[in-house]
Image (cartoon, rainbow, N blue to C red; front, side, top):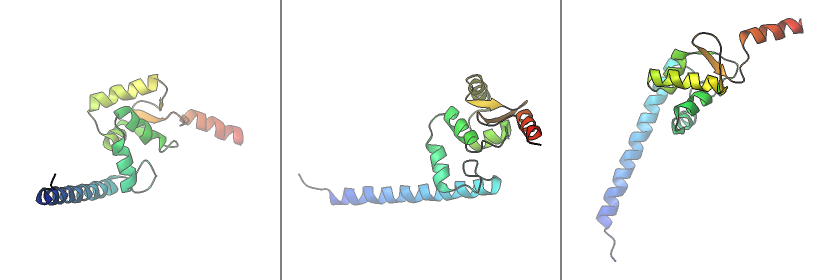
Length: 132
């Protein structure tokens, strides 16, 4: 069995080009995301590792939960969630409704969502009043 050295070199070069293209697209995505908003996973500008982590999550429900759980003290609008996790709007709306019904995320008013750990504004106000 002989090695086809030329084919090996050609495939290695194709792989190198593909890796360079991925790095370019990751930088471009990071630049676009940095200018649009801070990263919901870390609270600061997005890093490639956090973006890669989010992209690696396969399902839309998992992306939504990861996004909201990344900032349990924040409440997000539908638009903010859609901007970050993507997906078709109708599918995202039905996903959000299902996750609320399953108590995996929390509804915080019309079109407002938070982590299941996020306390409602009313709960927060009650706690503040008790601490006075």
